[in-house]
Length: 211
Image 1 (tube, rainbow, N blue to C red):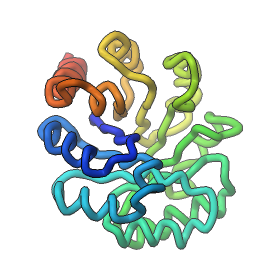
Image 2: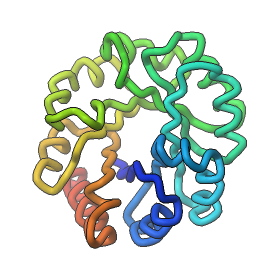
Image 3: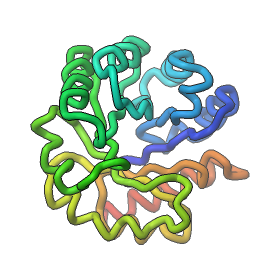
């Protein structure tokens, strides 16, 4: 199980600073949409330069111009790119084939899917490498969406990453469903001691997988 930390912030310098404190415990750094809106591909370049051995995922949320968008992010040296499940199959396939031509990978964001089960079922044939299962950031309750977990995992052999408002109190509820990756944002990034929080979640995840 991988730990992915999401930087849903607007300060690139601060994001890089936090990343340097937690690098030992993180498998994937996710550059949130807001960072990309503000800094563009420069955010990717700076993260990759600072952390060349760490996987960088761009939460690009592509919905159109798949080939062009995927090319831009791939050439900036992102390792993973996200595309929305609610867009057309043509766009999704275009993002996948383009990313793969650069030896990059693509994660399908199920956030806007009309049917998460159907999207999961079709994902592999469209060239996707993993699925992202979560809910809108502004949603009031953080884990209700997990009721649909079996619709996702039961319809795909691809790795499934879960993102929610994960914290010390609910991490074990998420671990029970045994996702392939857990995405944590504010609980680590905005913590008073990011290093300490990253270590806690890393060790918690590791202990759950070794049981």
